Image (cartoon, rainbow, N blue to C red; front, top):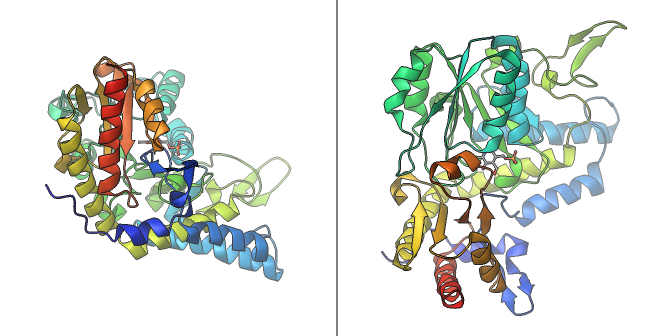
Length: 412
Ligand SMILES: Cc1ncc(COP(=O)(O)O)c(C=O)c1O
């Protein structure tokens, strides 16, 4: 394997101001924690800065110039997001705070209207807590049951159980498109086809897929898709729920308040049209503008190119990690996963790995990565995780490996 990339890494890195900083004097930053949150290009920072300097006003309610300008910027961001995931309409794009809130929106609105005692909801063993806890809460409240698709030793979904699970006629199948620990890219389209044939709807957690690979909601097969702006070069505080329009039309509002109403009387209200029905109160306007700029940046770079670059990086990273005696990497082979490598090093606690790497400016995460049941599955209390994005280089993989040799030396 040659350490080559299809990307002009120097040009990409130059777009991200933080990547030129030193963590400590003389120690440049090597950021390998994008699965937690991505860095932001200057265009996103500037779009938010410009918004506050020039256009700040509340949206949808005013007729003055600034209110119209702010509304156009915010709704323009919605149009960009809709195009980015190939939604049929902006009515299908609901802005939330993050992927977690998008999933909770479905659990509260659709779930409480459609799930009853004895109904089954399907989850998988590789879910982030965001796609587990809302369903546990709903199931407990309604007396519904949770059916679990297990994970194989190789870090893939064990779909041999899926037909039996579907015999129970579940109402909803919830799964991640890409695991934030194993990196596994799940065959969502095939799973959704089977789920639909059994009468279930499908919710896809796209928190790790939408930022890293081309996602087209018209071919994906999902009924609901949740993702976060901050993992895709955008700001924190804004996320997206995409859902098929017919479903959203039938769902009751989630939060009540301003903006989500068409008419309010003292004792009742009429809900607003989509997408506003699900956006109560003043939204994260500047963050919406920032997300729009992030989408422009990713679109300009090309999602196929982003994905291809990460495939090369992860293939190289896995090859190099396997060279290090005592390292175990979890999850499938490079061709079946995205740019995430969770690993352990025999005899060294993941927190110690992360701390020693940090001395060389290498930022990796250590812990359960909000996937405790998945760690239980492999009887691991924690793992170290290096996660890659469009701005990472093969040289940074080499630095990680050198750092791991230092860790080994230090811990004998
Ligand atoms: C797979 C997956 N789902 C959901 C989330 C939750 O994202 P957020 O905290 O932005 O809501 C994350 C965040 O790490 C994730 O990796």
